[in-house]
Amino acid sequence: MWKKIEEIQQKGGSSFLNNLLNNVDQTSETIFKLISDLEAILQNEEEEDNQLRQKYHKHWNRQTSNELNKPYLENLNEYKSKLIIACNCDQEIRHIIMNNRNLIEL
Image: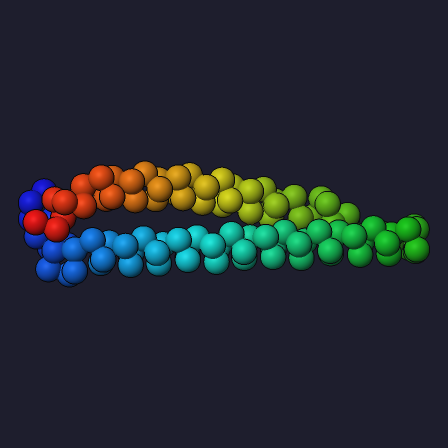
């Protein structure tokens, strides 16, 4: 354990760890945004499909977007759930680092 603390101290101590955590936070925000954007794209596509289905009735004989997009939405929800868990873990790690800052700065 002390070996890891020495390694962190050589890289800048708590400021190094804070930079790492800030990078993790920024990456998480980016991923949340990407997931949200993908969900919006799928939602827009489904709305367009429904409009065309209403307009062309039986001539619009494709599989519904809802059916086609279901696995994608399930994957996005799974990724989002995992990201939330990861963010909670990141907060716990941040808390541990803050509580042990004095050991890191020795």
